[in-house]
Structures are given as structure tokens and as C-alpha cells.
Length: 280
Image (cartoon, one colour):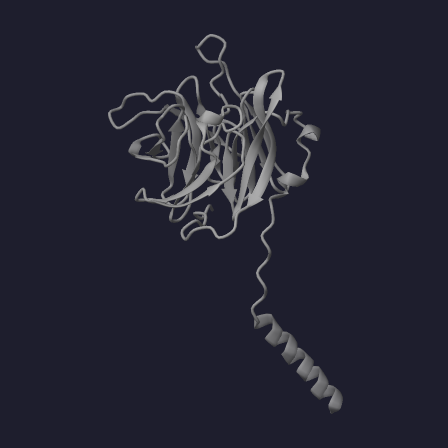
């Protein structure tokens, strides 16, 4: 009888435990940072980062001087090396490798020299569509640099070199929606969307100190700046993933100043509304 009561209590305890709330899993950096790029099977160089993007399953890097894109899943089951193609403009490539954005199915990158945005399928690595960047009047906008996918609106955000901090919001097929100004001082601004607004940072600090004020901003969707923090980043782009900021450093090579290693920084006390938009 005593044995039956003990077994009954044990089973009851197990059942109750199964309904108790479990502690939330700690947020960790994507596994991409445990990988040495130089040993990659595709053999790309890890000193040329220009654009960064992190999604639910993938890390994407735009490689400036190589004019290409790297797409890699965190679990190591997929890796794509998308090489740029020749453009009609003399020796330039269409993929300049400046910007990278993704919705976990497609990757968008900017063609700096041909004013074009390219959508690339993650699984196949093939170009799905491309379109010229245009303003509200249909005029072509030159020199697109940074790009982001806004999961809250299903739109794209594009900035341009010497664009006076203007951010262009467009549909996934390139239709102009609106434009707005980001805070800060610089020749081009890197932007990342959140549920309540945007993070903005002026890339280029280090290679040209006058092109950036070295401040990370957060401003609401109505344009109001509500938070800012000095950062010592020195690179071309940054990305925001689960409360962690990733950015590339600048290094001097025989090809000039290029993006170097990817670093990360956890910034505490982020403002309300800075949570990521859900990406399926």
C-alpha cells in the first residue's frame, strides 16, 4: 500500500511539473560567430564586409570589394556564395555588395553603380527580380547603399550615399511608399527597423571621421528621436538581432580601407519599442 501511494505521488508530481512554467532560454549569439570564414568551403575572404543582416535562420554578408553576397544558415545546412555579374558600365559589377537585408526567404542587396535593388532567393541563390530605385516622381535615385527589411510593414528601407539622411520606404517590388529623415550627421546612414521605430547609425567612422558622429540613434516611426548613445564602432554597417548589435570594423589592406571582423555589443536599457519585428 505504501509503495502504491509513493508511485502515485511520483506520477502526480511529474504531471504537475509538466505544467509548471519553464525558465526562458537565454539569448545567445548566432552560431555564425563560432565559424572561421577563411576555412569555408566556398573560400571567400573575411576582410571585406560592407553589409550585414541576421534573420531567424540565416546570416547574410555583402562583400564590397568581392562584389558578392554570402548566405549561410546558422545550423550549417546551407551556404550560398552569390557572385555579381558584369554591368554595361565598363568594368563595374552590378552587385557592389553595399547593403544586405532579408525576410528569411529572400535577400535584398543594393547595386551602388547601377542604382538597382536585387532580390535573391536564399535557397537557390538566383536573382528573383531587380528594379531601379525611384522616388515619388519616378526619378531614378543614384548610389543606393544600405537596405533593411521591415517585418512590421513588409516593406524595404533604402538609404543612399550623400542622401542627406533620407530613408526611402518601398514595397518589395520597388514601388515608392514614402521617404523620411533619419537623425545624425553623415554621408550615408545605416538603418534597422523595430516594432516602434528605427535604429540609425552613420557608417564610415574611422575611414573618414567627418562622415559620422559615432552615435547610435533610436527614433519613432513619426520621426521623433527618443534615445541616443555614443558608440565606438568603426565600419560600414551594423545589424540588430535579439538585443545584440553586430558591426564590422575597418582595416587597412592593400586594396584600401575595407571591412574587417564582425564584432558584437550588448547594449542595455534599450528604449521602449526597440524589439525586433517578427520575421517568419
